[in-house]
Image 1 (spheres, one colour):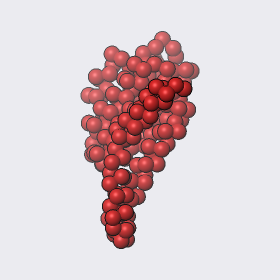
Image 2 (cartoon, one colour):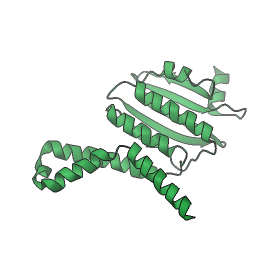
Image 3 (cartoon, helix red, strand yellow):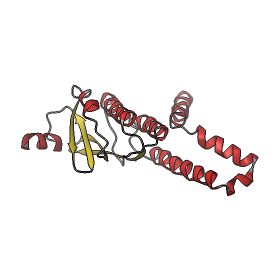
Image 4 (cartoon, helix red, strand yellow):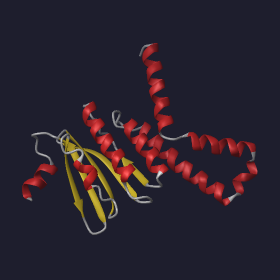
Amino acid sequence: MTMQGAYEAANTAREQWHAAGLQDAVELLAELVEAPSLAADPDVRQRCADEERHLRQIITLLSSDAVLMNPWFALAIAESRRRSIGLRIRAGAVDLRDQDVADAFGRLLIDCVARGALATDVVVSLVSFQDVPHLFLVGGSDFTMSDVVADYQDRLDVRVVEAVDQVLIEACPKTDAFTPLRHAAARA
């Protein structure tokens, strides 16, 4: 790696950390350094627990292989935190090869988090089926996203399944390959 490459990688990492909303954790640590007795306050302890949970999620992203999605995941984490939405991301070892697909998945994710019901929980999974990436979002019954999903029909194959107490959004790039999404559409 050249010095220029290392510099660009460091800037990218710094931007991702900033986008992920680490400022609150830094401020909390500064408060505790200035006044260690605050650590006994139940509200401060809750803030510490919230910050720890947030930092663990960010660290999980850094060890993920989903390089093209990581900036989007960081933005989604920051937005979900701002809106009091519980967001769990399970990206595993799936990496996208296409920046356009990553951008479409990322924008769909951000829109769902930005327009989702406050104080809901959402689980995001990025998986691959026969070399076709799939993004799954699962939320409670108040996670109705039909209007959001309609905005992506030109770029992605998207399906919304509403069950009694959960909503599943499944998205994959438009492709001629067999996918679970195409299989479900053919059966319908």
